[in-house]
Amino acid sequence: MITIDDVVSALRLSIFNPIVLIPLVFALPSARLFTWYTFIVTAVASIYWLDHYLRRAPFKLDPATDLVIITGAGSKNGIGRYMVEEFCRAGFSVLILALDMQWDAPANVTFLACDVTNREDLALAQMKISNIYSKLQPAVLINNAGVAHNKLLLDLPDQVITNVINVNLLAPFWTIKTFVPGMVKRGKGHIVNISSVLGTMGVSQLSAYCASKHGLIGFHDSLTHELTNPYNYYPDAVSEAPDAPSRPTGIATLLVVPGHISTEMFAGVRCPDRFLSPILNPKDVGRQIAQAVLQGETGRLYFPFYTRVSWIFSALPGIISEAIRLFSRADLLMSGFKGPGITEIEKLRRKPSK
Figure 1 (cartoon, rainbow, N blue to C red):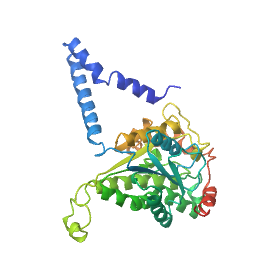
Figure 2: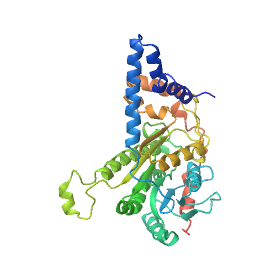
Figure 3: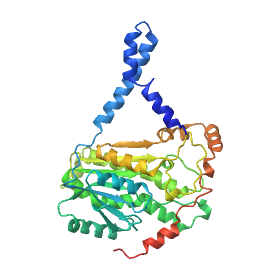
Figure 4: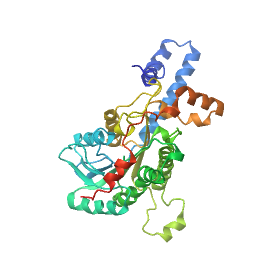
């Protein structure tokens, strides 16, 4: 099925491609309007390419010294699994922090049963790393763990709200506070936070989930600028904390904003318009994220295309945005939800850690 992403890709390769347009300018010297169009397209593309180049991480990952840590990669068909497999293909050792493991991982993968919302579990995992990996140090941290729900707010138990916020939003706080100080000391690290297009808009029956993903985007942006210019603008803070870095830390950050992915977490979810909002394959998403990290990409990673422009939805006049919501049936998204509930997740959390 053709999607808007296919259309956008075709346009990028043709009428928005300077490599195609520039030769035509010389072939049609009298077409002034076309010349100006080519100039504008080339200028915009050049800025985009320059930005993409300058935002690369200031280091290159090395399988001989660098360890990849991924949370919530225990699901047999989640994007975490396919990220793990891609890193393994590149020769890296991977540590999975999750409540359980549902698939057989390669030999260079270690699984630690860990509740990433629990600071004590994370501290214990950090201690075990030095025993398991004598020559490797954490260099990549991917906050992939996540949970969802499908109830209206007034029907949503307080514990479910707490659990969703803890896993989706607070856990990245705790994993970063646990593992990133060591990365800062090394001057090398890549943090990846996986949000969602639902972090840019809200839909019915996902109030806690949307709130957690909105919060994660704000947290990521704040963290990125703290790590880029930690004390540059606050000279007094350096005297109060003499060991704190007074220069860029060497830590790269990447925010992933995907659309609907065909995973167990959102099993049964209805996606009414496959042209505008195609369902993503978890294998493709996982591999794309891993490749972005391996290539040193920072900033934001969006897919499919509509996630790049979803912020426009909230900027439109209310009558227009509500009409779009009604037409797209966005608020019926969760009506067929069959994913794992919080009850099942809580049962795993109560299991003793190995």
